[in-house]
Image 1: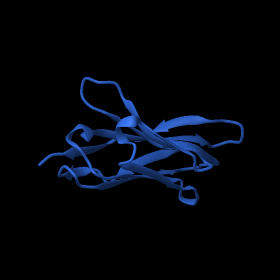
Image 2: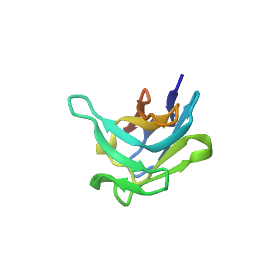
Image 3: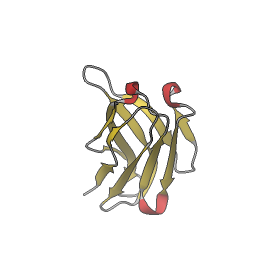
Image 4: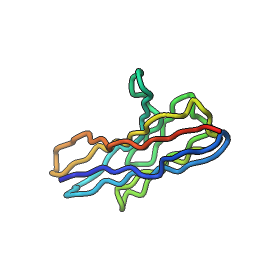
Length: 120
């Protein structure tokens, strides 16, 4: 059974940094796109960053130049390095992974979310 688990959230002061990690495990045949979304109460979940299996990346405009995404495909793990954090980055951050457990299938899995709070 596939599990996607985030870690690394917490409280940080404005201007600070945090690194989120997300590991997928459990009967994985292959992992394709991975990435991060975030959500604040009362708003829709929004894209933060994505990374393909080939390493191509995409960032939402509010985080460009401040956040970086990377992956370790051998470990089915994706990372989000967040620098120069602002109060408006406060949200629950969700990891996703597009995973094949059997050749020819593809399922979009979500993690449970990790809280990031940027406050002095």
